[in-house]
Image (cartoon, rainbow, N blue to C red; front, side, top):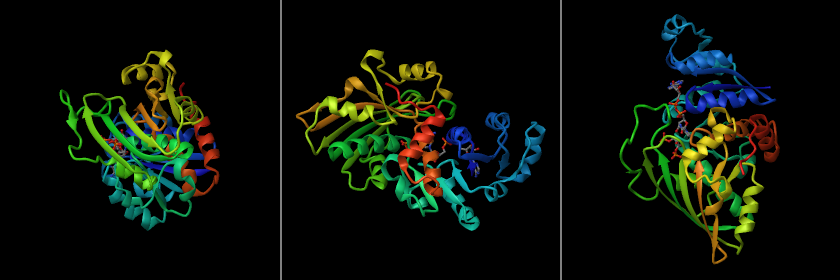
Length: 341
Ligand SMILES: NC(=O)C1=CN([C@@H]2O[C@H](COP(=O)(O)OP(=O)(O)OC[C@H]3O[C@@H](n4cnc5c(N)ncnc54)[C@H](O)[C@@H]3O)[C@@H](O)[C@H]2O)C=CC1
Ligand SMILES: O=C(OP(=O)(O)O)[C@H](O)COP(=O)(O)O
């Protein structure tokens, strides 16, 4: 069993912890929090040993009825590998301790590529991970882009990509963020970080991305255009998506035309935390013009799509499963991830 520590038990960390616990070849040896919160109670409820960054806060946890197993360093020492899901920028500060203890670590998309020196996506570059001490799972939007670009690149060749990301303003629990009544260019300059981020995994792709944020909390929406190298048809493109285990199709017949309806659907499916782990490509939007021009809309659930990628990244860095497809299959099966559509 691979012993996994989750440093930072928040939006991403709590999902990764549950996903690790569901795998046949991994166990959660601990999760960490900085202060008492509802999430600390959930860790207790799940039976995950809870470690804290500052032992000076131990009395506050104990007063709240939450047992503390030790400090973060003790958790790291007990682990084979750590998934660092602390807020963007904190991972970089944590890196020296992983180096000191000789532990493998996975960073998230809030860190720069250089923090790990290797950026990861299971379908695109799983086999390059072995022998690395560190990896970074690219951000949620970049993960969604890499999946779809890589799939079409493998099938038809991709000459260039132009994409616009309409980003959710904040996660559902994030009461301090906005906007409440605005469309914010984020950033106003071009490109947004997503294109260069895609290039950390797929360096040969010609891509320009633009991004803005809107007052929603559930999912980003992408408008994507790609020039393909080989002529194809809409039907052939749909077949590629149907055969991809992490690209789902929002079928025309479902009548879903928004993030809100898609959330209702994942909820009705009984997905944990309503998570959409796969890309949600809108079937109706998939278009091929003049044989080579591809268009689509896709929804990306920001809290969820990086979760299975973190699980595959654990196996890839540990070198325990050599075949990417086998790891992807194991991860999907343990999560109950059967792509929609
Ligand atoms: N929320 C999202 O939509 C997505 C976030 N990411 C990335 O994942 C990373 C984590 O983001 P979230 O889960 O949203 O953050 P979050 O704020 O929900 O959770 C972070 C957790 O880390 C804990 N923490 C803070 N400082 C710590 C420290 N020094 N040691 C241990 N724990 C500490 C906090 O208590 C909190 O539980 C970031 O790099 C972010 O950019 C990636 C994809 C999507
Ligand atoms: O990884 C994300 O978005 P991104 O792919 O646009 O960087 C997550 O939605 C977190 O983004 P945030 O920086 O708005 O919290």
